[in-house]
Image (cartoon, rainbow, N blue to C red; front, top):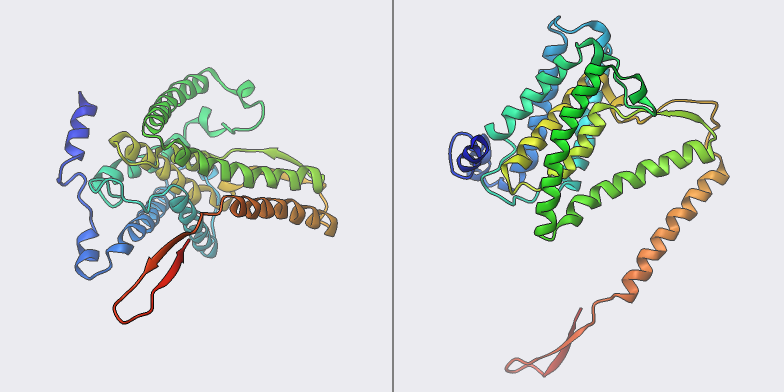
Length: 309
């Protein structure tokens, strides 16, 4: 019943889903920039909110790392750079439903709540030491196990719901493709570290990184649960960048005893990528769109035939 009520409210023009900035951008002829602006503004607002929480004195100093002024700015700029990639890979620039806006209370309420909530969760002793590395489940306390079972079960149930909708609407590739790209990039990174540089490293999945990955499953805003869960994950993403900085996207920690990437290693990577490049070119050549010939004639102009690709 509450979910149906929220869905009904969010599908009508009201204060819950009304955009803060769309009217201004539309009035002055910049409507095409509204969505990107609202995305970046939301992230910057959340980043500074996390900074307010961090410096308020309510968090233990061991819960975050001390940023310099320059570090604070560069972490924010790095977050925005990565977030632009998330924006386009998720297809958020495509406004599928005019009632769902980034700069709306429907998005901001769960977004800001997740920033505050995850900052508070970091103060819980049995969660503060939780690190997603190989074999982490062997170190979990009973409270941590129960928390992870409930939270992950809830998240997975909504992911399955989004997958079912995507399959029904024949757009499952839109959800899987970004994950494939991320997997390819980090797999290549692992090959460079372990196979080419011979560096020993620890796989460590930070909460902000995982939140960004999970957000891809909720990038198609055709239902209210998608936008709410996307807001929650992006709130965790912004909070993580402020609390821990750029290390939130480092999944290979404590790399040691490695050598610098040599000429041979660089050439090997270039050859590997060139194979992909040539494969794409070959595929394009084989599946080239057949040309269509059309006859065009105008009064006073010699009859001619044009070719349309």
